[in-house]
Image (tube, rainbow, N blue to C red; front, side, top):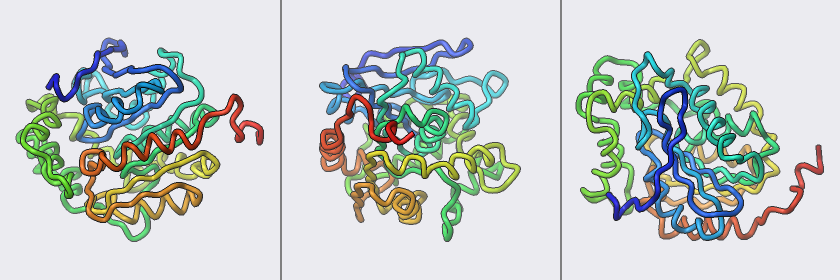
Amino acid sequence: MQAFYPFKSHFLDLNGLKYHYLDEGKGDPVVMLHGNPSWSFYYRELVRELRDGYRTVVPDHIGCGLSDKPSDSYYSFTLKQRVDDLEALLEHLGIRERITLVMHDWGGMIGMTYASRYPDRIARLVILNTAAFHLPKGKKLPLALKICRDTKLGAFLIQTFNAFARGAALIGCKRKPMNADLRSAYCSPYDNWHNRLATLRFVQDIPLQPGDTSYDLVSEVDSGLHRFADRPTAIFWGEKDFVFDHHFRDEWQRRFPNAEVHSYPDVGHYILEDAGDQVIPLIREFLKKHPLKTKPAWKNQR
């Protein structure tokens, strides 16, 4: 694992829970947010690429990666709590401006909810097979996710057999399927029944209708996304993602018509694994093309 992930670990105490994060490099902050069922490991090559010119900060959500894995009695496992955690981390690190968000999977909803709280802190957006809005028109929740979200069988498969993390590692890359070592690294934090609780709770927190725990919060973020249409934005999309398919990419493009878009027909969900050799240099190039001025243009408009 050390060869794959040669970074110094940092921990923030969150009400007695250890919140793990990477903090590599110096410069304007690039905050990278992972989804479910991955962890900060997903961003390892992007961190290596950017840390010579940026401060790269990559948390493991509670219950994921190298963070503590509490039970329901100690942690709520909701979107709001995830965003509160991120806010606590960035406050602890003194990161309150010129933030570039890099977001994948659930990281998009977490990142854009934080952004909606503090829009003036966000300078640039990098969007990787994710969402920050309700299911787009014409898109239904895939049956496999519905089973995981709504049935005892799904919960049993996730917690007993690590079906969600193992399945994602198996099918998440299409151009370059993960080898056994990589699959093992992605699944390693979720090595027993208890440690797989967060992967289940993330799925169960997907808001589909009014009354679902996070539905109102997602609606609020969804309705305010237009505030970020003036930020430099790059979208990188694996079109063979069985969840975040072209419906989600098209919705991002509708919201952010000026975004730079790179879409790959043969790439799956884990785009940084499947097409990292193309995408990572393009992310660096995107940041270079959009340097941050002392006072960003959108602040002049307010």
